Length: 75
Image 1: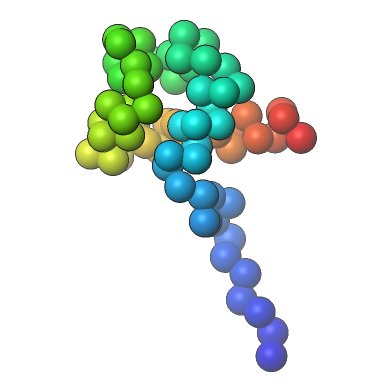
Image 2: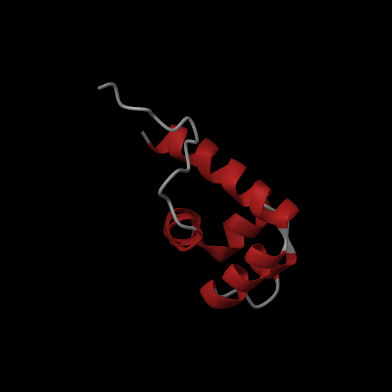
């Protein structure tokens, strides 16, 4: 049998993992410069950012796109 591969590059990666990695790589200040959303620029924390991004699809897409771009540069 042949395996079906998922074409989604974020398949299996949680939003928490994405934010944890980005914060470790860039810190909140630089992350806020790259992805200009309030949850990164105004008293940022992992929990408040997760809450906001789970409720706000447009912001989550920005963060996910930036994560994929950052992954390419980290390799």
